[in-house]
Image (cartoon, rainbow, N blue to C red; front, side, top):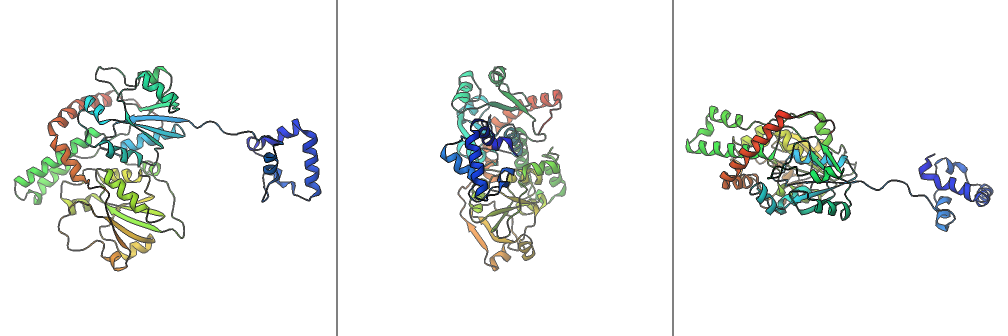
Length: 419
């Protein structure tokens, strides 16, 4: 017997033996099975009635839910951010995320790539996030820390094992550490916003060079140089995929909705279209095109993020149930049957693809299960990349400064258990 769940019974025996004995006799006379007390209930269990009558007061079980807090800029949201928030959520029951304001980012790091609205859509769209505090300060002062403890009932402040220093060189989390309310998680290797900005600038610069050379896109040497200039350092493992996946299969009568794409530089537009797609059914299956497929249909300088990086970003979205890693360009009848797909959807806003002789949605259209969804936002991967190029000098300076701190981190890095 679960003592914690049935402790009111034993309290009744101790404090009200005569009442409890009388009720037991009555139950026996009525021919009710005593198997209830072994953990099996009847349709209307007597203890429920007794507690309602106020004879016994049921003891409350369970502890107060632990609330943890993690803050950040979350600009150019990537799977490293998602993994950090996943680890933070594992240290408590409820995760509250502080989103640093545009003004604070500008003052401490330089111009943000994404607006507050776009960053909010990305953070709140993550499956591990329970609550978001907008306009959080870049530095956690004692005043703000007290607000977290008393107003938001935060138990612990979480941050990665990489140092976070303010412009004056002090530790941004010193106040939380001093209060004994700080916990550390492991940084996700192989990716950072600095790295992604570097990839974007290199990719678009190479694309510009190719245009200037008139046809360099068809030059294999130029293509190889472009791809090797922004290689990912991410080392994918099966464990990481499992950590991001819910591992739930659709029910036998579930309406399965399918949407596919590159989902490169996962942004607010992706979150919103996935949300709309999920509303059309019970289970959302997302196809992530391979790097080769993306390059073939969008040009040699794409994708910016590689297949497994893009897959993790999509898997982290709360509206996604499952992904196909390296999905085919054309949707076949066999694929629809294999995954029991009820509807195939596509957004009205998408990257301009290179000329293609065939329609990838020809089969679902012929079956009458294709739906064109109005995209809530007009943001694209290319438009995000162009924002960075528009502020080229500012991001070059920021990246140079960050590159030094990241190099120092890797030189002094020690193994951190967890995840």
